Image 1 (tube, helix red, strand yellow):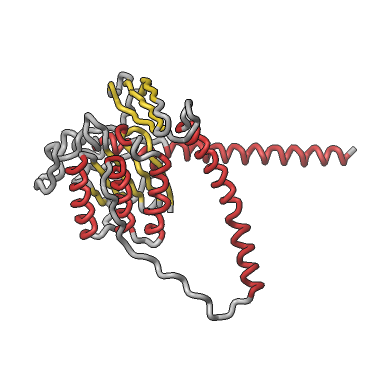
Image 2 (cartoon, rainbow, N blue to C red):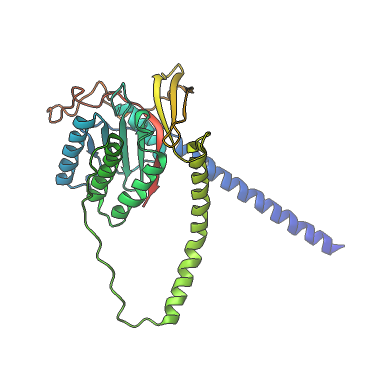
Length: 333
């Protein structure tokens, strides 16, 4: 009779241990979620290009500022950059939307703004796109700019050129839509790696390859699953209901802007580049959420780029009062 009693005690102990572990993990999850959902502390802008980290070379800041200013004068589109030290527990998506709407990037009547936010300590970044440019810079194209243009330079800790080339890539998408000439990237091309002259054996190379594969294969599979899911969603959204080709362009225009107390209205236009299919519809926009600001002006349309007047735009200084469309993409390096 003692053996069943011993098994029962062991089972009870293990069960209690599992419950304790679940409680600990749940507490950690709640704390993590609460920290991610807290309101961000937002800085004020001094120009199109804003470095709050002190890591970006002044010459590159001025060069990028002048370039973005010329793009705004030529196309009326406003490209903003914010380089911060840390997100301080806030998700990069939440921070980007809040900062975009606080600054009012883009012209108010067009919502043609783009924000590139970089958090150096968190090693996260995001391209946030205004309503008026969501058909020009899709989520997939924003992801391509991050993965293929910006993060390769960031991995080399070459943040100056990474940001500059990212702005060039964003501009090229705008230029492509407007039929303008594409711009060349600038930067340092990494030298090709030389062969190992120390005579590493074939067996050692195989072992190293197996170890690397064993470590990265699970992450590759996870990435592949998420990639397939994203691709399916993109195909579903951009598949023409008439010709069934992935040629659907989606453009969204804000008819009525939402406020903190009322809903807004959004006009969505779908146009197939292949068969000419056209569909127009209106959608509801949820009311805005309130965020704490870091002081200064509460709207980009009422403030200006510095008291010295070093920057002036066609809107009379400062951003034009545009809104985020919620589109874009995030990444890490």
